View 1: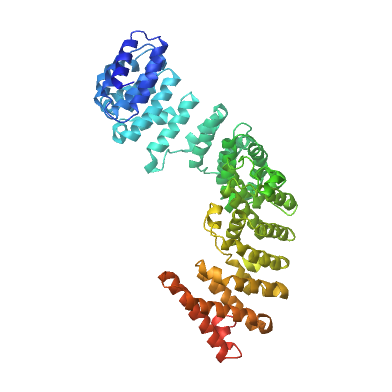
View 2 (view 1 turned 135 degrees about the horizontal axis):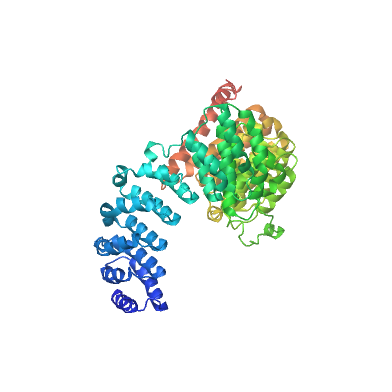
Length: 585
């Protein structure tokens, strides 16, 4: 239907306001008003329908009028008389529409806004007062200078003492935004005391906002502080709203932080049962509030996560079928929940030696869900954190799980596991697992031969495990002789592919590690060193000049190999090579 046809149909249907056809046409009019292009032909029907006594018709027409005024501001002037009449209508629903209309129609602001809003703020009906406060916020945003000099800031402060709690909260929010450059709404002792005494009258969403606003006031005396704490205490265990518990806990922590920080453990004990309930609920918004709060506590001296150790399963994804390990993808129910990433970040702080086995078993099963690669990476990052943070023997158990993932030979799993490994400090790894980790890392090199591996990870390009040469150098004393020789021989055997795939730094690390091990144990690593030097030198001779960057990088690696060879040749004691490699100072 063209705009002209729609306009004609609207004008005809306006004669029968109760007709269902009119509501259908109004819906089409609203949609048309949002489309680009000239929509001036709709102004006539809008102006004609605005005086309607049908509230549903009037609401739709006001919405359309706001859209039309974006490109045709004169439409507001044509409708001005009707809007002003609505502002004086005895029906509060109609009056609300008129007051709202004044605030969203820019051409009417300088003409009518101050008078209309001043009257509406004092209206006898709470709904009109709510609309007036929200409309003031809109005008402060769109025309900041219009209300500031007319006493509206003081009027809004007066609204904070309104008998209607919604008016109170909306006034606080509007003032906080309107006065943002001055620090937001000012909360003094009297206002704080007033809000505290009215806390029982607020509904949960309003209550959460008031608790947030109360953070703007700091009690001046201990008597005032403990009076405030006693009034706030019931809301640490609030059962209806996670936002209330979270905001109250943050307010509590702020109040006691300077003078009574030891009381924080009591705040934790008081609020954790409620937080646990919300975290285990099906309400994703409630879970989100709790998780953001627990992340906020990360840098605090008191450990807020320890009491959740018995509820560790709340931070884990649900266990998946073992069929996932065979490569069959289950329905992607975990990837649909963005909260899982936050939970996995917190899980290491909840995990302990007592529950480590169950946590790791759950992570082992859920990590195999290939339908969400980012979630897979989050699982593996979590396991690495457990390796670092858990005491023995749980740390070794976590590392063994990570090794099993690396041994899986699946590009998605291996690639993400290797990236997670980069966070590990090799000097702190459990000594008894280093040999197994090295062997697994060497076996993972096979996936780098497959160019499609980078695409199959769907994450970031697969990189060789840079931790491998570092492990060889830093933890040689924990590696069995057989494992060390096997690892070095395998690394050297992969050197041509590593160089060919442009991983020059990794190739250089392999060369340096091989020389270091040769200096310490010549008999064990003489063959591997000879092979490594030969490969690096030969690659420098045979690399094509077509790719100049690749050629220069390989040439540099070849020169490095020759330089080390000359050092070892001219100095049988290897003193110069040791100094160059940092083996001795």
